Amino acid sequence: MSSSSSIFDPRSIESAKNTVASFMKTAFSQQNVSTTAVICSAVVGLFAYEQYVYLKKKKSLPGPSFKIPIIGAFMDSLYPTFEGYMSKWKSGELSCVSVFDRFVVIASTCELSRKILNSPAFVSPAVVDSMKYILCDDNWVFLGGKAHVDYRRGLNVLFTRKALGIYIPIQEKVYQKHFEEWLALGGVSEQYQLRFRELNMEASLRVFLGDYMSDEVASTISQEYFNITAALELVNFPIPLPGTKVYKAIQSRKYIVKHFIESIKDSRIRMATKGAEIKSMMDAWINSMYEYEVECAEAGKPAPRRFDDREIALTLLTFLFASQDATSSALTWAYQLLADHPEVLEKVYAEQVQVRKGDLKQELTLEQMEESTYLRQVVKEILRLRPPVLMVPYQTTREWPLTPSYTVPKGSMVIPTTYPALHDPTAYPNPDAFDPDRWGPNGIAEKFPKNFMVFGNGAHHCLGKEFAIMHLMAVIAQSSLQLEWTHTRTEKSDDISIFATIYPQDGCIMSFRPKSATA
Ligand code: HEM
Image 1 (tube, rainbow, N blue to C red):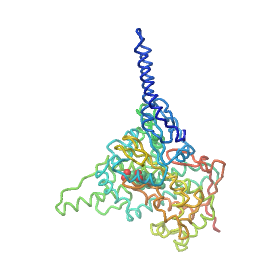
Image 2: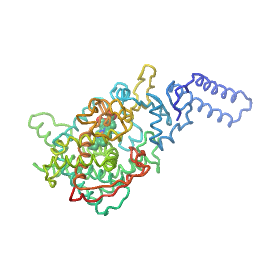
Image 3: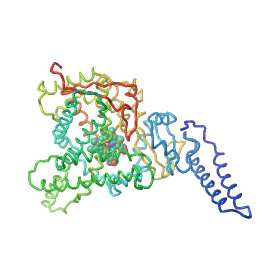
Image 4: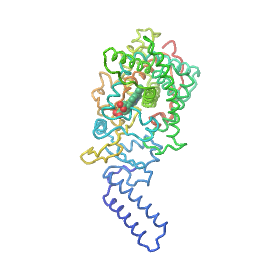
């Protein structure tokens, strides 16, 4: 993609217009005009008109000076590279590209990215057609304005401190199971990226839905979910024909939602018993609905809205959708960075021994995590250095003068980026270094909260932020106490590959052993 800002030339628009006019004139001026000539002229005319529209929207923004007819930069979006993204961000505070009929404006600075995330009067989260097919178009995430705010408020109860405390033992059980599986491999070195993903998926499923589904179904869901991740491109083939990624993702969603609904029905039966133990996010949600209904009945208020099985299933699907890839990516980088920085891992371990007052057999608790200030710094630094979500697509609902020199056309995709703000040397000196101390009392990172856009900003900022941080802290804490791991560094270890989110290109080659008794 070109990064020059001098590409724009108003004469290009004029010449495109002239091309259309001249072709039409030529085609129709001949007496025995053949059908082929008319069709060819019409096609060329349409292509020229497409270029005209593109250049008119592009104006002086850096971006390709020519749009590949019809598909635009579709192939680039099919096989994105981190280097490609970087060159786009470096090309200017705003740059553009066009994919099919979507005109895309990319913001690379912290200021403009925050402006986009905080301007609901001009933008809403981009609803790519494929996402509507996959998540169902009546899903709450597609709500806007007050309806979105109200629905979201109802979900806050699932992420309170009390709720996080309920999830911790569920998580611990899943971690333990996976640690044992890794140790059973007897210290063999292999790619662990997918194993980290499996741990994460099972932790999510068990926290969100409890133990109602069998291990076999949970494992099939984990496999099926690959189809959904694969379809998470910014721009996808527009029609979900059989064989396309979106079609496969829809089939997987159907399987997942069917099993979610079965678990929800079981949870409703169990939670109808007064005093039933809450063992998952879904239990907590159903229980809070029951409690609220009783409260309203007792107060003589009208009965509150009841969320049906499908609504709950689709909401939990969005949690999986929003969390699975981002958290798996963060977990992979966490293991890699800690293996590559043993001095940091040593400090994490020492802190865990301290918060458990030397009793390493203690069960994991939320209080321990809250006391682990250094571990929290480590997690923030992992997320800063390797932000799982690089870009958050929004779309303009009307024409928007985003900067004094550029007005984004209505209906464009407009994309804030997180990476440049998270690697800004003013906020994070030596930004490519892994340095958790920058978040401590001797560092300056906490003085720049606006730069920490890992979880977005504004009305749609990440609902699961605290849960995600707590989960990452808990996995690292338990690993530091029970495991020793070695990272086989390759020339690709620090290179980033993109599969919805970011991963080390070599798949993270590791081996695990039990923590030695002398540690
Ligand atoms: C490291 C892990 C995670 C990262 C980096 C992350 C990042 C993000 C980002 C960048 C957004 C878009 C924010 C915006 O538009 O301003 C978002 C939205 C969201 N996230 Fe997360 N997320 C993570 C984990 C989770 C988890 C674990 C959950 C749920 C359990 C979750 C639930 C959501 C939801 C529901 C939204 C949409 C909120 C809305 O539209 O109102 N995320 N996340």
